Amino acid sequence: MTSQINFNIIDGTYPIAGQDNSSQGFRDNFTNIKNNFESAYQEITDLQNKALLASALTNGTFNNDLQGNPITNAEMQGMREKYFNVVIPESGSVNVDFNVGTFQTMTLTGSTTISDFTSFSDTDGSFAKVGLQITTANSAYTVTMPASVTRAYDIAGYNPSTRVLTFDGPGTYTYEIGTVDGGTSFYLLDLSGNNTRVMGGNLVITTAVGGVATTGITMTVTNIGGIAIGNITANNFIGNTIISGGEDASFTGNVTANWFIANSAYVGRLATNTQPNITLVGTLTSLSVSGNANVGNLTVNGFTDLCGGDAYGVELVSATNGGSATLSNAAGFALVNPVSSTISTYTVIMPPNPMPGQLIRISFANTITTLTHSGSGTDAVYGNLNAMEVNSNIGGSWIYYTTSEINSGNGVWYRIG
Image 1 (spheres, rainbow, N blue to C red):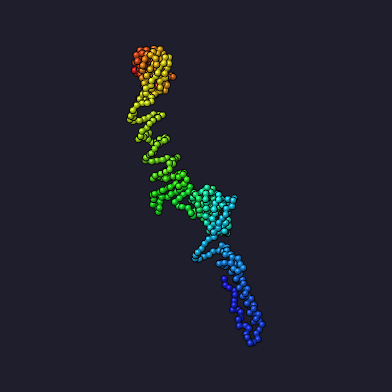
Image 2: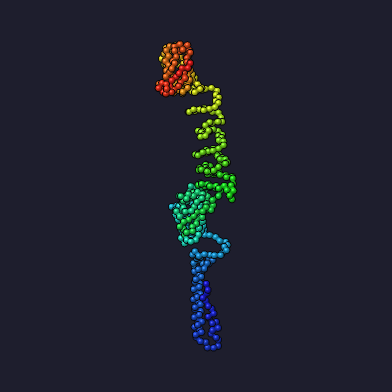
């Protein structure tokens, strides 16, 4: 600004001493002095309204509002920003006002909702930000951000869908809130998060530095109970999964390993879709096979239950006079032992569900006067025992066969001995 004060138009030598002086000279000097006073007044008033001051002028109000005007090519020293403590009302809903301080703090007394970030409208066309420090004494407290927060991803404990910010424990957390469109939309930035710690959400690790693959990923779960809930996805997982504290590991997908070793016990179903045989299983106290068991060499100390096929179980039949017995499906030998010395009548019925090729040998421990020997259901018996064979403890052997060509498709027991 060029000053309009012109002191050169004032004649400092007028009036001249010792002579008559024209009154016009007085009038000209007074007029020029008045005009300079007016210019000085206007310029001083303009400075008072616009200049930056260290303190308020006498009889004035301190105001260094630059009204959004730029400060350029300045070297800053000893700068500081306005601090403001936000008091949360009992309603738990509060605004963050840009004009009250560029760094604001709040202490949670419960879950809180920030309804809006206000007074940012005058910042349109420029970048404006506020630092927000949140202190909580309870990890259960949350802070819900306003809908204008549209960019807040990869922040520990923040859900972009619900805009709810959670904390992994009591403490102080610092964030930055910024806008470039006058407060229409905001971003949220975590300034205090530990880059080696992830609180909830998804952990994505890129194991390449400068285009070169790196190794050595360690993940430690330190939440309550030490439980990791979620998925670990990798093209190749090489390393150890170590669980301490007696917790269980639960996998809903597939576990692929060269060796699966259970130190104490394996409980559940062991199956494979490519290997029909199970090898190196150790000692089995019991084995149950519902279908066909195809095995190579089988070494046993003895049979404790009846079984069919080429290995036969022994069934002891305690016969009583006038009674009957249906032999077991797994019987290979049937020993008919009369309870009394002589039995006049008795009935022996072959197994109800025999296997094709099943062989049964029947022997008698004493005399049965009249023996009825029949197949079960519609099965037939070809070659019954005669009286001499029953009374002389001779007995006989039968093998089972079934085909549509005999007995109308029902089975037949053929005597072979």
